[in-house]
Length: 266
Length: 268
Image (cartoon, rainbow over all chains, first blue to last red; front, side):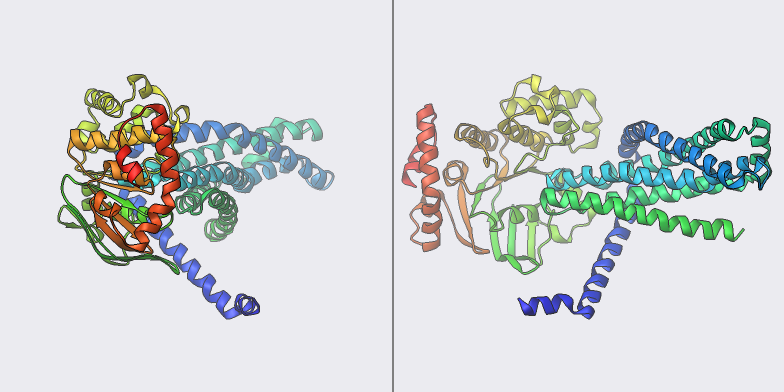
């Protein structure tokens, strides 16, 4: 017992074990991504399934994404009013609301919401299929689980999530304007002037590029974790929570990275 | 022909297979028996390449399975039907779609008429009515799921059939139906089969030869009568362990007026 405790607390051993586990995950994740690229040739298999997944994921997520974006726009508008009233011209509110939605709140909030919704769904679905041997069954039939299960989910996410982000941006801006109109008395002309004054076309591209990066993270990580689930129902639960946490952390890291690369470099 | 040559497999510290060698001749049905967790399913998964041995070789149709590439393995698997322990049916697909997935020839798979006919033919072979085709796995009983699993496995007209615990979790009547089905498929389709089970009575009924996997090694191989006559302590211990369940099943079957395998059941 005491020997076991000593072994567990040995920092060198812990670091070594963590490093090995990380290297194992990185290696297997890389192979999975390579398999997905290889599987793209089997388009007859993944195209119809991608459409099914895109419909399920996109349509099913639309309401919650728009709801969150609407509230984000409203709160941004109220806080802008609280901070700017009496110090800056009101048209600045138009700039702050539209730019904060397009550059940050739209893509990041959408991705975090979808990490919970889509990420959990993918990990749980694939994890259950793994522990009930459905993935083994596909392989035993000479069919590729990557083409049948993973590629449709990832591509559906890559198509749908940027689209949802753009809807979220638009919703946040509209609700932000309506809130500013109600609480600050901001006119449409002032709002539009502020929004246009600070807007650059790159901003929309930036928002789209970010959402594609987030989509990549929040689909591939849960797919990888679900695909490699072990140990029954407990394993499915573990894979699901790990998928949501890992995808969320990856989104925040990618957020910092894309901001540094795309905006600060500019 | 299927050959396992000095196969070793371990999961972390747990040695599952320690120098297992086995041969299944064409057209033969071999039952692989052993207690739970002894590595029977692992052996089966090595035959169709779902698992790789740590050492040793697995040869199917003259092909060295562990050395096969992705495409060669897929081609080989199209000749091997695999019946999973719990059916492993795809929940989101109807029974017809599940069985259709078993049609491994791509040209046939894309021919809707052929698929429809083949699905109905497979359902007939496993004694299920055509109406089942439109149902989903959640609407089926355990025995029906197993039969749909078998139908999917035979849809591609395989040369080999691997059964992983085909009767586990079933009541004696349904277990008897599945055993009868295995016999019938062997006779009608002429496939080479490996049946993994710990149901002694059922295995002795369907198998031409029986192998006992005991403590990571093949302890005994031979025709059922030879195994029953064995004086090997491990064989006796395994058969005695199964005796009580076997007698209960035998009584239940006799009560149901079922036929088949009674003599062997009493011998055990």
